[in-house]
Length: 83
Image (cartoon, rainbow, N blue to C red):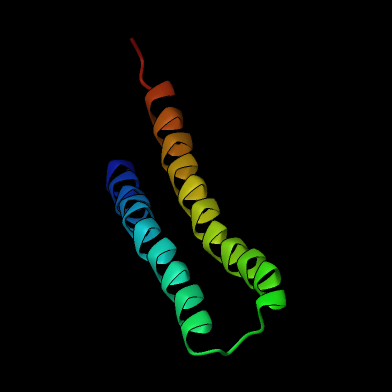
């Protein structure tokens, strides 16, 4: 049963990793769209870049957390094994 939980946490971690390039691409496309449609002034782009980069980094944090959770539980489960 514990291994099933680790597999499910692993699937969550894989999903988080697969989402990373999608999110970074979305942030880049949003920046390009804002500029091409003249929705922001050039002086505002520094703030836009910071906000969209920070939003993308939340996905990095989620991926790190998911991988850490899998590793944590795997090490607990493997540590309980008797030799």
